[in-house]
Every structure is written in structure tokens, then in C-alpha cells.
Length: 494
Image (cartoon, rainbow, N blue to C red; front, top):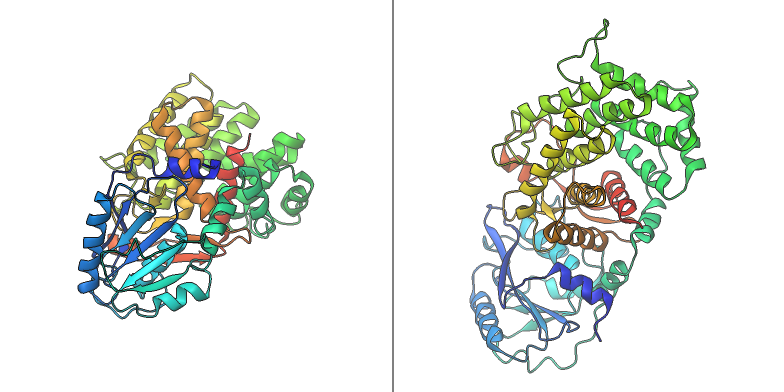
């Protein structure tokens, strides 16, 4: 019987051909590591993964290719087949579970390990030398999801007939538990681990607190914010773009409490966009040219305008947005991270998507600033849509196949899509499917204990695509990723 969880997964894999090829990551040399999918005849069939080439292109690689081709012709298709024929194209030393920094060290091992955890198959069959993979998969949670039974496979073409009954793996059972969560349930689980620190008034902490406010946790958020409000601490003692964006929590508190002290803090930051005579600056300070500032500089200005009703803040929001577009908007519609780094970084585009969505929410409808921001928002959503992966994520380098699928940028873009559909800025089945797929990806990659799969580390001061491709991918707790997932989840709550 087809469960609603299976229906969700059907959305994720909608449109798959009989044999669909896709990338799962990059080897240390930059070579793509590819996978193949052949769907089962039934939606509730178990998932089996065939892996070959763990020590380089060998007989196991050929066996997997042969098995996929034969299975594609099999009309019965009792299992959903995923295959990675050449898991280690460089023949690098494999290590399972992998150690070191993903994906700079033991890249091939990290790619396969985390991909298997996120896919949560019921069985893995390994052709040729298994490099210790089978024992590692069965012994511990894979990618912080769950263990997966694994067997050595001779490469014989009749592998399907020898399988017998395949039970649900612990990883598969955990994946189903995660996908069964409502947006509120995920947000509440993450709120147990994130959003309890506001010692520094920066955007990461603020976004988690905004999400907690949407969960109804007003009193605790007020308590955490109070030292910045009563004068005990100076929120602009160490000004930066991160701190400016951190003031968005005061906007939310002002709306819920009507306490003018919160509005005063928002106005104080927005006033940084003006000189001593009250004239608008060229742009908000501290932006350093980074696309992050589409969010960190623009949003707080628009919120100040909405809270105070003063047109100057809306005008400055429009001015700053246009300034950032001039610096960072590429001809292909994506954002470079900054002029010195013409790389469409995943979270850099997530910041732009988040900033445009939050700014549009505040700008007066019908105004020139609103019309411009709306056009910018729609153009960015359209540019991002083709780069969503089969698993519903956006890559750490958006337009580079094989770049790792990144959690925080996906949550930010997912939020922007969800807000746009809710507000009527975008319409159509393709956008609804994109946000649904992004939700499945985020929900499945966040554990009840707050562990996340593949959040890019902080990124500043680098310039080359290779440096972006090799930014560390965090597996475990991460405040930035947790906050963005909470924001996305609370936006999907009904």
C-alpha cells in the first residue's frame, strides 16, 4: 500500500527515466563520480545500491554497468536500483568511515559515505575490493542516519534472483521517521538545539530566534534579547554586516510586543545608511562587496521603513539592492560571491534569495522599489530552478555538477520559494515542485538531535572556484544550518 511518505518520495523523483544518470560528487582530482537510477515497478519496493570501482576502474565497474543495463530491460524490477559503477575514479586510498575534512581529504570516501547515508538504501552490494565499506556500513550510522546492511557481490548477472527477502534497513526506517515529520515538528526538534544563544547579535542567532518566535516562544526570546534592549550591552559596539542582519529579531519583537525600544534598535542600524546630514550613502557599510549583503544590508532597511513608515528607509533599501546587483549579479542570473570571486556560491545565492524575499515582504506594493525587487526576485528564482539536483538541493557551487549538495543554501532558497508562492510573487507547478523537493531534502538531512548533512563552513577571502569546491562540508551540529532549516520549516507551517 502506497503511504504518503512514498508519495512524497515520488515527488522527489518525479520524471525519472528508466535509467537516469546523475552526479553524486567529485573525486580528489575533480573528476565526477556518477550514479544511475532504475526505478522499481512498485513505489514501496526496497532500494538496493550496487557499488563498483572502489579501488579504481576495475572488473567491478564493468559488472555494475552490465547489471544496470540488464536490469533496465527487466520488466518485473522488484527493487529500486541505485548504482555507482566507478566510486573511486582516481584509485585513491579509500577509508570507511572516512576521516579528515570533507571534501578536501579522502574525497571519494566522503562522497560515497554521505551519499549512501542520505539515500538510506536497504542493501548495498559491492563488486570487487570493498575497502572495508561493507563492515563500516553495517556497524554504525551512515551519515548520521542509520546503519545499512552490505554484502560483497561476485558481479554475477543474476544478482536480483539471489537477493531473497530484503528487510527495511535501520537507515531507511530513520529516513521514513524524518519524512513523516511536519514542518512544525522539525522546527520544534531543532529548536531544542538551536536558538538559545544571543550573546552576539549576529544573523545566525537572530534567524533561529525569529523561528522560535514563530513557534510561540516569545518570553524566552525576549529574555535573550533584553540585554541589548535595556542598554546593558551595545548591539553596535562591534558593527559588521553580520550584526546589522542580526537586528531582524528586533523587528519581529517590535511587531509582537509594540515595544518602541525594539523599533529604535532597528532604526539605529538602518541609519548607518545615511551620512551626518541625512543623505543616503552609496550603499550600506560593511558589505565588502559580498552577495551576502543583499540580505544583510537590504532587509533591515526595508524593515525599518515598514516599522516607522519613513520613506527614506525604503529608498535606501532600493539603493543598496541596486548597488549589490551592480557588483555581483552575473549575466546568467546567478550571483557571484563578490567581484573578486566570480563563483556562484550556493549560500551566496541563498543569501540573495533570502534577502529579496524578506525585503519584498516589507516594501510598499506598487512602489518603484517593490517593482524592482520583485523583478529581481523572479529572475533569481528562474535562474536557480534548473540547477536544483535530483535530490532537491542546490550545490555548494551552484552551476558545477559534482559540487556537493549544500544544506544551508537549500534551506534559504527553499524559504524564498515558499514565501514567494505564499505571497503570489511566483506561480506554477514547477516552483511548487521545487520547494516541495527542497523541503524533502532538508527534512531528510536533519536529525532529531540537530545533526545536519553537508553545511558549508564559513567562506570569506577566497577567490577561485577550486577553493569554493573544497570548502569543508560539515556533518553534525551547525548553528547556521540549523537556523536556516528552522526558518524554512516555520515558513511551511500552516
